[in-house]
Image (cartoon, rainbow, N blue to C red; front, side, top):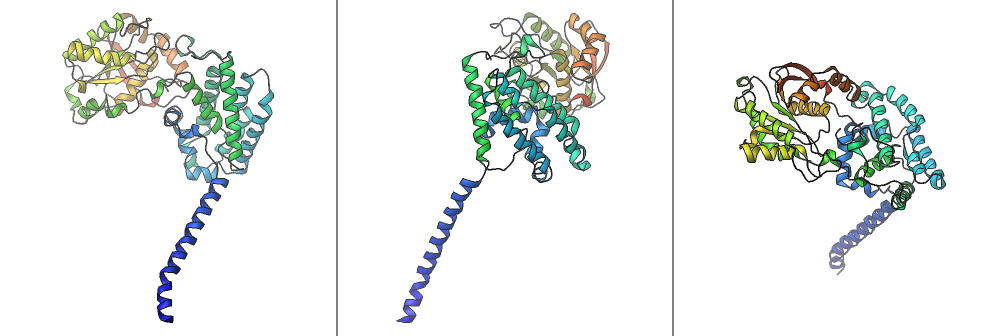
Length: 412
């Protein structure tokens, strides 16, 4: 009998052990729910995350890097910046003028910039290669720029086309900013003393304000190289570049100042010129370049309309068209075309051909355009060569100018 009871007790003991384990797991789960930091839902918005990663790619990478979390963001100096910022958020609740003063409290301060800059200077070289003080200053400037334009209502660099869509003087906007401020404080309290990078709230708030103003231009065509540009990318993999004198025919967009017109007459003319060059087999690709620019907040993307025009009217194969749907200026028409030529593997020293109307062609060849590139891009997107016809100019891309520029959040 004793032996029977002992044998029968084995499953009972096993069941008892399972129950104990389940209770322990439940306790741990409750404990972690109470004590673990709860991330803001802002950080889980896939569109916000995509936009942040597009405008601030290097900063986003180091924020999620475990080594940076241990060596940098957990250091006493950075944690102190986080707690100082939390205090600033609390102190600004009753500030004036409202809501601009709240947004100003989100901006990266000179003190924060300098302290973090010094920390970055002292990092090992291999960490500095991932992210350094120069990049930090560019990113901090860009965060503050976005907050000032789309939060405080200051003029953007290009007021005619980059303006905010939300009126910052309205009660509606004031309620929005107060809501964001309250959310930031609640999220900070829920972290239970565990510090995030001190600039994280400023960064996410800046990106959220872009979304609030329907300024998601930089991620409008996510997955472009898996969709519209997939045929041209595949074609480039098997292309003999030696068969063509130029890598591509670059056509800058010309948006109409009319919300009902899909493609301007001048834009159509430029495409007609490009097709002539393409039919002469001067290049294997036509790069159509231009974003949703003219008029401001238009729904029509220049490059998308140009691509459609080439396919519908001239029956150009999709594999021969590269769409660049982000550029907002002639400067970035060329910079972005240079980026795309690098993506499709075009030979670095082989020239491309800019095809446009004579007026824009003369401007691209002028010293004024050279100076504008230096002032706005801080580099030359490429070398402008001779004009071989009234409509075409040689262009040799400069890959050193292909870096992401957070100062232009609509087309970084």
